Length: 428
Ligand SMILES: *Cc1c(COP(=O)(O)O)cnc(C)c1O
Image (cartoon, rainbow, N blue to C red; front, side, top):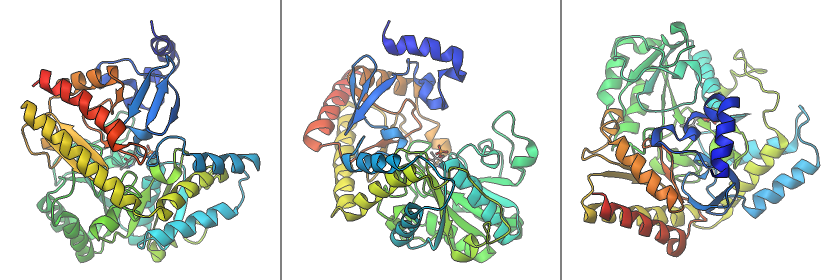
């Protein structure tokens, strides 16, 4: 038995599913999770000494590759000065300034400890500012595990949202309305029904939690127009897309200005960090200035700020960083497309910049319903082959592949394509 298997056997007796976050359990691909001992650049090494080219990147944060020397140095220096004070620090001012500088829609920001917390707090601020309760969310978009966002997919456009998890009272989701991604009509119908009650529309500007589903032409613009018409706020959940598609995230990439934005993942460079921010008048609703209460003992933690500041500074100051990363993504995913097509594998490969995903379906994937037509058994087999050949993919059909600056075209990407190509040739 491998050390990973031994650890997993013990882990399941001590933690639900043996893990601290469900997708790590590898349940949907029928494998045993690999226990990771270390990571560097594009690689992770497990406790049995197997090395993997990593396309999860801690679910996004590792855009520079694992354990970047400047990020590490910054963290070590901060840690040497103390781990937390529960008091104001200079690094928080630097972080706030940097975020406001690189994301034009953000006039004020509040740091929190996770993407979930950022979303929960942004929704509260939107409700406090508008004095309204209802939120529109899109089926298949993930906004963390806060009660109001755990609604059943496709619960119908007119009705109150139904909880999608045990332990969430109906009262917590009754003000969450579901619309379909890339379907403006479904949003328009909700606004026509109860536009004056809608506090906000929250959206992943690129769907990246049902696999990768980019917005169609006009979709995000249409949301902006509808929100303006009804006096509702537009919230971009950029926990994945922030600092990923461009320095100023999806909003910079597509040229759409949301009222509020949530961040996570890349902003903490691997430390537990989230943030929400936006228009000054909305953010001034937040305590201690305004009546919307929100707090955090470890928010703006100095070690976490040091990690995020170092990473964001590199992203900001490296010339052509995003142009190069996105070009590399275009190249990689077009090669992958060619392998799938040549082998005759039914597929839909969606990609944007350094995010991509192959759905094993012959349908075009534009929303949750079409994503769900994928053959998840086929994905599981593909995953198994890849991980056994040293390529670590997301252990679920409905997640993205994350490329980083550390993945080199001639090395890691070429090797990955070789392993993929051999598999698709045999399994079409
Ligand atoms: C990961 C994610 C979240 C939740 O962030 P956590 O840090 O896991 O709480 C929220 N929104 C989106 C779009 C995400 O991808």
